[in-house]
Structures are given as structure tokens and as C-alpha cells.
View 1: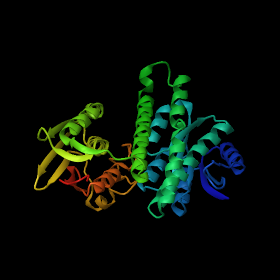
View 2 (view 1 turned 120 degrees about the horizontal axis):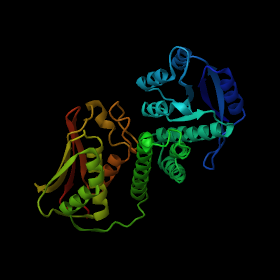
View 3 (view 1 turned 120 degrees about the vertical axis):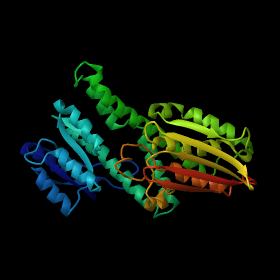
View 4 (view 1 turned 135 degrees about the vertical axis):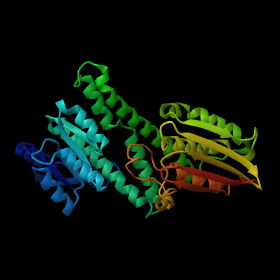
Length: 376
């Protein structure tokens, strides 16, 4: 039986021994897994000792209390985040430190467990983290193994998305119990965090559906003359709510008609993904320009943004499945890492190609080029 390494960091010996006792007898299993997963637990009582242990061997899961003698838990979390360590952190916090819990999730903690917690609440949190680790490991196998792993991954992820996110459930419980008082303003951060999770979940579902449809080849493509300018306008309208929230202006520069032979739905997917990325990775008050040209025997669609940009060494990774460029500026931006790989696959169906130019701090430019006889 596979076991995950768990590090418990808490200055209360009773908490540490209680967690060790519960997890030593607990296993997690799902219908899509061959065998259950168990846990090996290690305990420590200070942040300094935790950092030393982590430097020797990074645990799979860290249960981290904030109120520690000396180095505080939030400092340990910042250390883990700064070194980009491959571990999942659950903060242990009292009900009174709600603001700290929100801060911790914003600094990279997967979730938090409020004290006092029952054995069942601990098991529920560990089950959620175990699913997360399992799915992440399958993601890594995705580029090494063939279609069988890919479809297994999609099945597992689709299964996982049927259930409400444990994090959202936790936030709702906090609101239900009025743990931050009766003033609605005290819950603004929780509401915002929940909406981010919901949006990410919805976007992931849509990306998975797009990828599955392309991979399977089961849906009949309805190739016919389509006007890319019209599709661009529709996509800009669709992205309106997100652009307004981020105060990003979208401008279209295109002739009244640019006709190509294509599947309309596939063209909508391309425009929606290009514009969505240009808005998400833009700056507040930024600009997006969508240009469509029909010349020199080809149709080109270019989307320019004034966003955070991409380091040159990261650009080759952009079009791989489930890959997202990680930095301090992107860690709070939700996404599946599928959008650009989907665009690349669709462009190839039309004997087309996608390219990118980018400069950190200045912005990015994505261009999809279709030959005029595409789609035939």
C-alpha cells in the first residue's frame, strides 16, 4: 500500500499525538484507484524544526499551526512558497483567526482546518488533499505516457468535479455559523475566494469538454463558410463581464467580413481562449487588441495584450497540456493549463499554426494563422 508522508507542526503535544493516532489507522480509497493510500506521520513542535525537516525531505502533506514558539506558521508557509516546494499545506487555525486563514490560502496553503476539529473533520480534509495529490501526480504522467493515461486522467478529474469543492463548503460553514460576526463586510474575502474557486471549476469543465471532444474525434465537424469578424465580436461580448471586472478594454480591428471554411464552434473556442487569457494575465486598466487580416494567401488572428508577459525560457512550455507558468504574478490566477494546447490542436486541424511573442512587464502577442484553403 502506498503511503504519503505527513508532517504535523504544532506546539501542542496533544494535537500532534491525536493527529498521529487518527491518521496511522486511516486510509483513503476511491473507485478509480487500484489500492488505498495510507499515511506515515512525523511530528515537530517549532517552525525552525519544521524547516530543517523540510530541507532534508519534503513531506507530501504538512499540517501547520500558525501560533508556534519562535518562527510562526505563516513564516514557514512563506518559506515553502518561496522555494516552490512540492508539498500541500493545510493550516491549523483557531476560529478567531479567520483573517489569518484567508491570508494563508492566498499565500499558497491548500486549505485550513479550524480548531477544535473532530476526527471526522480531519479525515475529510486529508481525503480532499489526497485526491489533489493523486490527480496532480497523474498530470505529471500525462506527458510521459500515452492516450490511456490521458483518458484515465480525464475520467478521474471529471469524477472529482461532480462533488462540491471542500473549500467552498468550509467557507459556507463559516458564514452559516457567523464566525466573523453578523456584518456582511466581514465575509467579503470568503465570498471572493469562493467565487474564484467556482469560476476555476467551471472553466476547467469547459476546457475538459473541449479537449475530450477533440481527442475522441467522435463529434462530426460541421465545416462551412464562417465570418471570423462576427465570431470575434461575439467572443468579445462573452468576455465582457471579466473585462469589466478587471477594467480591461478590448478593441477589434478587422474588416466587416473575413470568411473561411471552418467549424463555427471550433473558431469560437479559439477566440474565447485567446481573449480569456489576454484578459486574465493583463494588468488592471490594461488593453487587449484583436486583429484579423486576410492577405497573402492566409488568414491571421492576432491578440495583443498589455499584460504581465512571459519569460523567454518559459515560452516553449506554453502549448503543453496542463502546463501553467508559475510566478508571484500568476499564482492567484485560476486556469486549467489547457487553453493554449486546445488552440494548437484546433489550428492543426486546419493546417494552421499558433505562435507567440512576449516580453515580461510589457505584454504578449498570440497569432493563429490559417491557410485560405483550411478546413477542407
